[in-house]
Length: 116
Length: 112
Image 1 (spheres, rainbow over the protein chains, first blue to last red):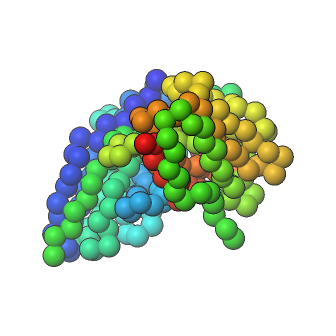
Image 2 (cartoon, rainbow over the protein chains, first blue to last red):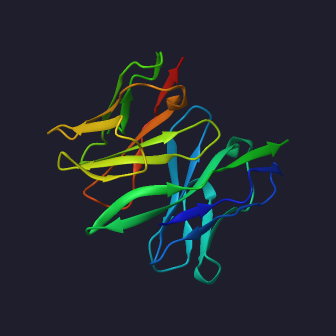
């Protein structure tokens, strides 16, 4: 069974500073990986996804993520954070069976705090 | 183009009661998945519906059941509610069995 680990429960970053959120996955085959963001009391918004090909993927809101198979990682980055980036960030992996996608397996999330 | 919608927004029930939550998928999507998100945790997969059948199920008891209608909308039913069922219930939809799921705003269930 697949699993996702987000080692950092909380991260505090100053506005304008760079950001990296860590994600490690466990999956037997080529993983399909996602990053979602959740504002308080809201649903999940897809930031970006990796299926295959270029290991550096671009997403919305200036985010990017790099897939590293050798490290089983899919870390999320942003060069300069804005106060509006404060939220909960979830990394997820999707399994596949019967020719289609299964349910997502999520990490426990990283809470991002932006300092002025 | 409306995204995934869920109703109700909030719900308060007492232990032992039954609850039904509803989800309408994004236009053009025919697969619906349900997730439970306890406070401070990541979402956990409950089950997935495709072609009006339960295609896959996570590690949840039989008290959790669902249904998908011909218009692809879906219901999540929880019987014999426990305090531990208090959570945000998220619905996600996707076209076919594709990998990318789009989430609704969720239903906040409180069990007293």
